[in-house]
Image (cartoon, rainbow, N blue to C red; front, side, top):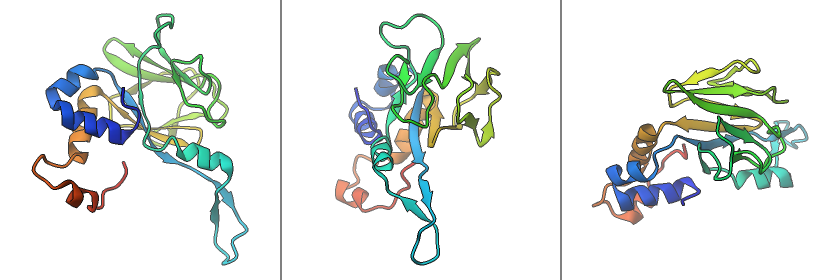
Length: 183
């Protein structure tokens, strides 16, 4: 299964829209941004991002796509999201709580609930009240710890990939030289 956005783009090109939608019928969270630690020791008087080893490790998650699905041996219920591997969706990063939040499908709607995470959970820059569900419709930005993620419903994710994928007749070399935002 693809892990990073570029791999999903290649899979979308390979399968086409309909087959891709059948193969990947679940929502996803895409790592769209990573905040850094600020270091006020700039020689030019400005603020610089500190490139500590933990920030370098965190950048390995940039462009990562997390399918929002239950783990194979998980008990029924909402998808658990947190730092440790016993969650359905594990994001191994110290700014994310052990059990950060849950995402549940209730009456056909996705609902995100913060579980009292130390650094909170934000949807479109609004902090969630712990243990109070927030409805997600698709296209929201979700912030956990220092990560900004995009929540996509399956249909929206396919459209997102379509917009990022070059047409079949476009030369790949030309596509590689085209400036595109990462997310």
